[in-house]
Image (cartoon, rainbow, N blue to C red):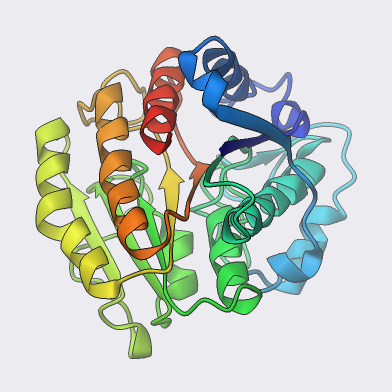
Length: 310
């Protein structure tokens, strides 16, 4: 059974605040899933809050405390302009981080075959001590750290196909040889990181794979990159668990990208990763929502993603 994780708090973050990363994203996804044939093969699971110690594996404790102690009546900006908090944000971020750990633990324990976490706020831009790019806590990094520290795994792969480079995730594991971080992203594009020559540092050298994609890239370009670079890297690493930073903002309809991807591509990339999960990980694969800002394109892409997981 595939788990789809959600919580009402994910719709309350930035409620009544004009922002491209808006609550309607979750609503569109859930409505699409519930009206789709995939609904028969998924179980909806309510997210639980994180233990602060889980978050502290990748984030500075002062930063965590600053976020969770926010007591605000109106919107505040957490970085230089694009990451905003509203009254529900601290709890939404806590539950998004908790959802990440909850999902990977349930899959690791065999309670679910795979999972998709429909979370807000997203996470892959968040760095250890700061919010960035709509992201507050780095959900996927928190999940990876839990698999290693609590689950006892030695090799976790993160594949990030969000149109923006996951600078936060990369930085958290740049010196780490237990996490293989692979990112396909439009380049140059926000946040400006993710050049192909960044391959890791120290004992993490060779465990970061950045695959810059040009504006105008299409489905075939991504399939070629998967076949030439992503899959060989996974085959070499032989992960025990695959995590996906599932951003759907590379879609041709999305307002924040220049690539020309279709909804079907997200299903195809998922199929290829699921084949590797079946080969190396006993099928263990969990995805977490990152970007995707055109509501119809987002919902269709998530549906294709879930079809492939099923």
